[in-house]
Each structure stands twice: as structure tokens, then as C-alpha cells.
Image (cartoon, rainbow, N blue to C red):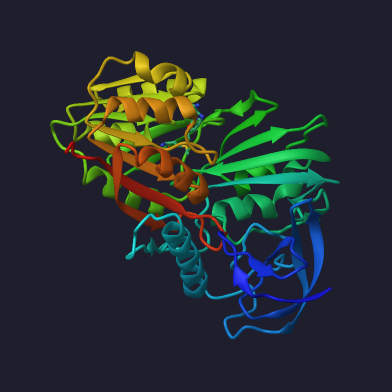
Length: 401
Ligand SMILES: C[S@@+](CC[C@H](N)C(=O)[O-])C[C@H]1O[C@@H](n2cnc3c(N)ncnc32)[C@H](O)[C@@H]1O
């Protein structure tokens, strides 16, 4: 089918006119004429991919990725890094203003290394090869590298035959010292050759959720702090950008602050805040992440912190502190109703909302605006070349009239 891209959607996919149904085209640019094929057809919307570009946008460039035609991890590998960033910035700015969130100077801070930045990658294994699935499908394609991943991860991918197993999943995590943690899920035999350990710095292997070789965690050094990160604990994928975000957040914390870091992971932000604040409290649902956080508190000799294991929505109103700042950094689906209700009721002087999904951020801001005023939203290009953007939103409690 032939189509013309008439707009971008909220994440930068091309939009086409198609008899009333909403249709998105991945990896397409405004004003392009393209031949497309469907990858997902739902009642209310369809997603297409480009088969052939008939009329190119002047922004279109050759992708740096040999798998660009099959892989949908990146949406903006079809233009320069700067142009892709501009599109992400424009679509978000428009979305904020459509929702009456007034951020005229919204910008996205660029990534210093727009390639080779990811410290974690999740791969599929089929037929003793490692790769990904095509968009919205189980069509496997093998890869020799992913240009977004750190070199040490690509070196492991290159040497995958030394640990080959026939089918399953492989997640590779890499720390600042290029040590690797391999997390394998498979029903099949795993045969790891000794040579792998001379080619790659393997800190540990976890097989089907169990410790298989050496450690089941990595240590990450960030500025003056060390973090233990277990195989199933969350850790930000982009070191440079996560440090920029942390520095920005610390601007709002002072020596009298009593900070709640909801959704705290291994305490990445909690410990940074504690170093500046009177007190900090972290809440996290993953047991290993909270055990890591407690360990991180100890090894970094930080005493003014407490951590709680559980769901934010079940725990937060049982903590008897008068928080001056609350940091919320929820997963993509944003804040649940109970947590929003707590934030509205508690009238916290400042909320710092970190979001990897601007659409749920906007949804939640509409509720929080009953008591809070959006002071600023800054974008950070945590996931360069992909359609994702990390936003940090600063909310102040409205003054009573
Ligand atoms: C986006 S990560 C943020 C982690 C942390 N702020 C950081 O920068 O490393 C979200 C974290 O929330 C945790 N989480 C998800 N749902 C939760 C819930 N209902 N209550 C508490 N933690 C939750 C996840 O396990 C994950 O560690």
C-alpha cells in the first residue's frame, strides 16, 4: 500500500490518512511518500512499517545499523541524531501544550555518546544464534552487534558461539568497568567454553534465576558512590544521562530536606540525596533491589537512610515522616490511584516526578494539578535513537489563597 506521512504521533511515528482509522508508520519522516506493510492491525489503530521510500524526506540518511530494516528498537536511526532529537522535542512540546501544560522552553538534553551507551540489552536466542524479534512479531533475526550497546556487550555478542545454547533468552548487563553479568533463561543445555572467559570479563552468570557461575550481581561505581546491582534489580541503562538527572535533582535538595525516594531501585538517587539531605527514605518492590540498597547504604557508610520493601501504594502512608521532597520514578505505567491520592492528601512542598513515559506523566499531572503547580519539565535523551524520552518534572505545592 502507498501512503503519505502527514504528521507525527506522540512518540514520533509517522501518521497516515486511512479511511478514519488511526495508522502509524514506524521509521518514517514527515512528507515522505512510502510503500508500507502492516505489522499490527487492531480495531482502532494499525501499525505499519516502510517497505520502500518513494519520496524521501531531506532529513533521511542511511542508518548506521545493519539491521535497521528488521529491528524496531530505534525509530530515529533514519535521520541524524540531532534531527531525531528535534522531532522528539517537537512532538512532546506539542503534547504538553495540547494538555495545557505550559512548558514553552521544553528541551531534551542530548546524550554525549548517542551510540554505544546501553549497559543492558535483552536478546532472544534461536538455533544457537543471538538476536531480536521483528516489530510486534516472533520473527527472529540474528545479530552480530547492537550499535546502541556498549562495546563490551557487543564483544560478548560476537563471541556468543562460545556459550551457545539452542533457544531461550539472554540478558547482558555491563558495569562501568566493562565487567559483564549474563542472565540466561533456557530449557536447553548451556555449554560454556573456557575461551569465553579470556575474551570477555565475565563477573557472573545467572541461569534460570539461579547463580550458575561466580556472582549474580555487578558493582557499579558512580562518582563517589558504589552500588551493588543484583541480576534482577533495576539500574539506569545510560550512565552519562542518569548522572545528569541526578545532578539536576540534587539542585532541589538541601541540608534540611527529608526526602522520599519512591520506586528507589538499589538506592541510586536515595543515597545521592542522603549525602546532601537531613534524611532519605527509599521504597522498592523488588526484594533483591532493597537488599542491594541496604548493602549500598552500608558500603558507602551512609547512615541517614531507611529502606522499605514493598509496593509504594501499600507502604507510603504508613511511613511517619514529614517529607519536604518526594521523588517518584515509577515504571512506564506511571503512578497508581492510591499513590496519587497520597500525594494530593499529604501536601508535600515539592514533588520530583521522573518519567520514562510522557503519556502517563501527562495523565498523572492532570490529577496532581489539584494541589500542585508544574514548575518545569526537562527532557533527557536517556534512550538515544529510540522513541523514548526520560522527563523530569518539578511540581510545587500550590500556595493557599
Ligand atoms: C524506573 S525504576 C527507578 C529506579 C530508581 N529511581 C533508579 O534511578 O535507579 C522503577 C523502580 O520501581 C520499582 N517498582 C515498580 N513498581 C513498584 C511499586 N508498585 N512499588 C515500589 N516499587 C516499584 C521497580 O522494581 C524499579 O526498581
